[in-house]
Image (cartoon, rainbow, N blue to C red; front, side):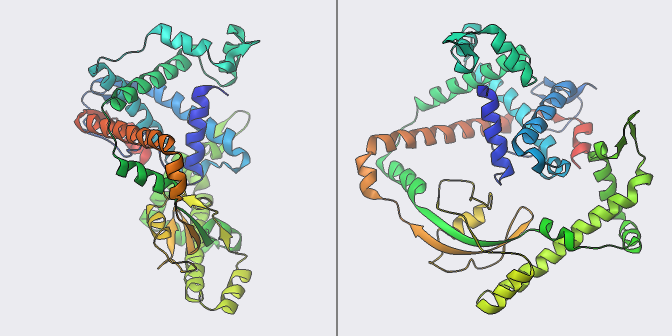
Length: 401
């Protein structure tokens, strides 16, 4: 696949499996939310530089396609809302503008020749060791990218690389920092866990028409149903000709879906509480697991440095607990990661091999420098973001509510 596409696929896959993060780690709406600088065709502006609705929509559709390509039939429309992809997309675009503006302030730029050379040297665009323009254009077309869009992506990648190089030239690292970085990457833990996911309980949930009416009679629930309708209008269209069903026509179906999800969450929480109370009683615990079609799983070994706990996801709370538990000890409480509940205990922990550290010290110094370089970049971005004047359109904010 293309270089830029590969980077974004890796990033999006990480989100799906639990690391709810973006290319740049600072989430949320930013800065000044004044709309006075915005045109009707804008979703946002960054220090006066506009992000158009068209630019936002194209990037959002591209992000959706990446999810669909990566997850195939596992991807559902609800995931777009669950992962807040509209905000993720907007944050990406804002960060891109900030990086370019920050690079300009540092008097850094990428020439057309640098972009061209990078593309020509990309093996995916070569045939028989030579750049093939027709092959290049066909690959872009297959991935719904124009040459200008792809070349802008390359320009941004190269620009970010120049910023990282500039920062690296000013970074020094001590032996203590190198050792700490090595230990973070090489001290490992393996967790045993039971996942109690509300989604698994949906088939066990039933609702009556009366329950749905009572549910929708609550103002907050009706508002949730309307938000669901707005965010998932593709579910309420008919073929030939395509026509959007009115909210009133699908209100009860939406209410039933939301009520089923609520009941599934409640059932999952009740089951988690029961398993927690029975965790020290093997026979009672085994019966509960069997009755609920649940089982113990293992994460496999993972290091302190990872943000993602295999099979569980992103949880700083669980990460901290994992490396402070005694062997075979349970975490002190039920852990919630995203929407799922986890009962967890430590199966094994392996210390870092200090003999290996000394043997590959030069390699470890390089890795620690790269890590510190990335941290410096994020701090730089965070600083310029804190000083930026960023405006978000009412349309975009409403779409996130």
